[in-house]
Length: 158
Image (cartoon, rainbow, N blue to C red; front, side, top):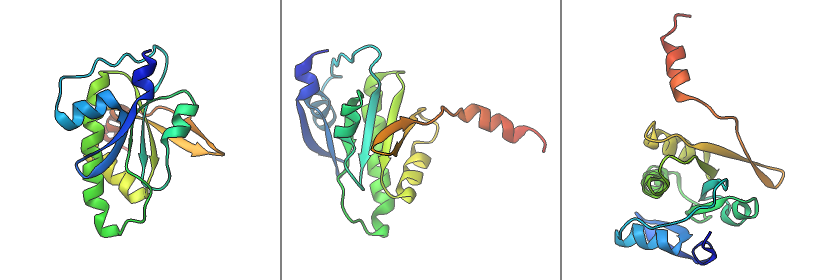
């Protein structure tokens, strides 16, 4: 992997949310430049951190994830701002994940549960994500779930 790309992170603001990502991605998203030619190491999982309650990026990187973006920054947020914040984050997540094609994308959610639920409902079934759970100082991928299996189970009579 091009270490220069991996280590050249910078901040920008997209849809009102601060985003910390490789320079190439930030430039692409904020200036609508041509798709970046990121080379992501084979076998290295790709992750996005949503950091409204606590930072996620450095821990994801320490665990071997390629940090595609860290969105938001820890702060106290009034509940009336939850819907707009969720909309802004969902838009950024979809724009950033479009850059990696069909690869699995892991998401670490460090935010109020209500905001996480809103983000998930906004993204809906546009893309499948793997969820990371933080416990005892590290992230663990939760077992994969299948939205299609769930939808099928609803069709069966009880």
